Image 1 (tube, helix red, strand yellow):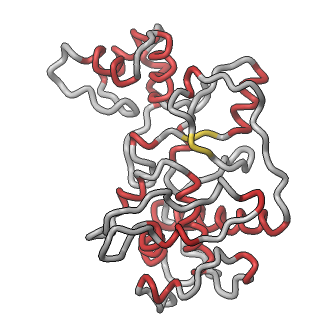
Image 2 (image 1 turned 120 degrees about the vertical axis):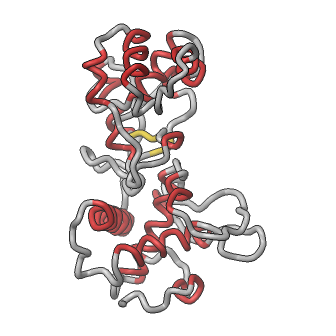
Length: 274
């Protein structure tokens, strides 16, 4: 399918073989002492064996590779989807698939439709929901909150990884923004506890689309970007982006606030203008 990841392709093929993607990948490469690489970025030999299992030329799979990078979700966390894209696939009689464009760690909405990305169920390759996915009718305030999150995540990604200048309407710089995002997304206390994003106040149609973790976390000794890349659920990443985006946007209207007071003092980043 267009822009489909190789991990998605393998998941759909594994469903036909009535096994898990991991089992299929291991069985394809069990007799090769060389490293087959990752499912999304296989070696030349691994790609050929995958193509043979699927029944198509390896050259057609080659453009769908996605080598790992800091701006992508961790390979095992790439299990998100756009409900509008899947509605369109369903209407055309096409199978569900997961696209490479949805795998960016700082992207929580579909670029084609603006729909909020969601965490796919583990059995998505064989999933047949009885009804199309429904999109809520957001209020103006909810739309503004989502736009705040979307514009912030886009600015942060482009500045961190693709050389774009940091927007003049935001405080700090990309490095400060990334550190703040990590600080609010993980437990900085000395004991097992919830991160700051668990305190956000979500109402109305945004419930379920923005939320903090459901379980307490062990204290983190060092804030690591790889830990954020492990957060497959867009709702959890969206919560951290909301808090960081609102904090770094000067004179952001109070009605767009995530409801957390004295945020900068809590994470030790009071001067975000430097």
